[in-house]
Length: 197
Image (cartoon, one colour):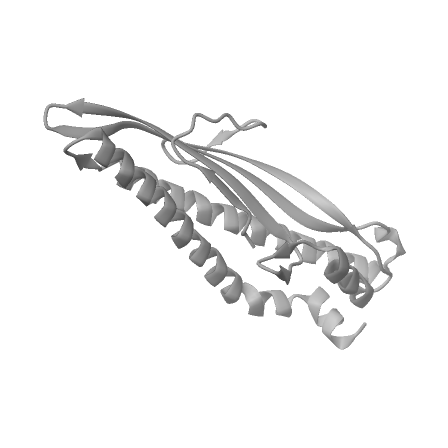
């Protein structure tokens, strides 16, 4: 789930951590963090997740991805047209995942179910990042296509595209979580949780 989004438009920002290239003009870095959960059974661990896990849009989440983004660009007035000559996007993603503090306390079968569930959670959160990077690629293409009579208009259009991208990508993230709900509940670990094991 992604909700934490601080967007700083038209700012020259350098993000900490080694960024890696995504789309043209887009750089990103990803940090994985964990929060401790306790329990000797899947149901106990899940209760601990609900108590200690992240909150996304006022709802408790099992895992979450937050993003901070910075857009910067250069413009050129060429006769009667101003256009963007360089567009840069930088994103810093932080993925928060649960980590049982006493994994060895779980029965071997439950430990295996947890490890399988952890792989699912990480893959799910990485798909959120892919959605953001897809939105960034579309934004980059749209911004580089802007032509306006003056640079003030070009800047205004660029900023509007930036805000629209945020809203569109938030909707994509919400829809993705809704689509994945059945897959989440079908995970063997979650099946044990729902049985109260």
